[in-house]
Image (cartoon, rainbow, N blue to C red; front, side, top):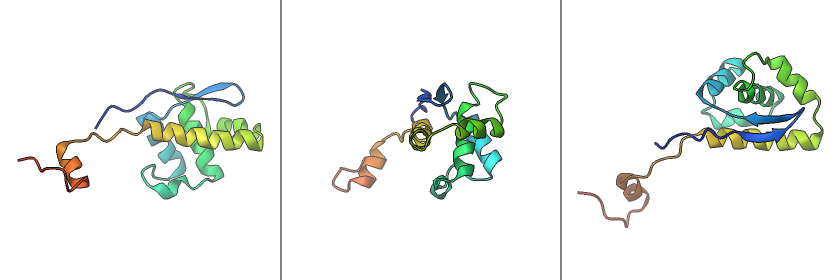
Length: 118
């Protein structure tokens, strides 16, 4: 696997914020919500998921931030800003996932016309 992307995704909420899902943020999200970050059904948008993701993505900026604090940030958003935030949160989550490294074996498995390595 290739190295994870660690560049934050910038979004303006109550102020400019940097959304970042490092490994600890992903675990914090799972612990706070009881949901697995590895299951696609987890990301069906809900208030619980959005608040948990925002909170976890901001922990790198403020380790003392609470879920309630994240909820207060969300309370101040317009529908347009809330929709933008959802997109940015998912963008940050996807950016945090390691890219798959292509090897000859994976290329051959995905492309049967590619010659098999000996």
